[in-house]
Image (cartoon, rainbow, N blue to C red; front, side, top):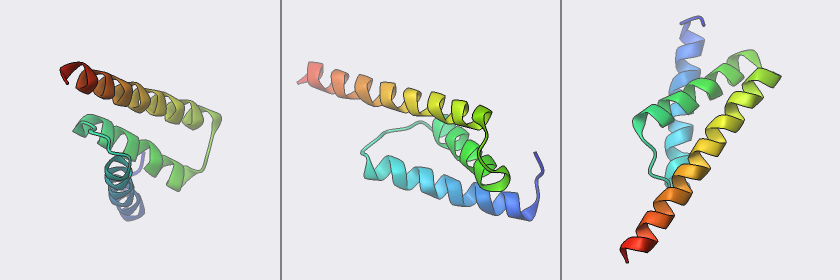
Length: 79
């Protein structure tokens, strides 16, 4: 991947998007997940959608959903 000015701007923008997404959906995502998802989104912004990119987005989405379910389950069992 190119480290052009445009790509850097897209990456920064997508990190903000992921931070907003996690806040708006009450998700506690680790830094690795935030950066990884932002990187995939930046790739989409710069290169457009492909099947391979769609598969990567699906895996990230599944990971976030599973993480959210585990967090909810753990919080319920603590109360």
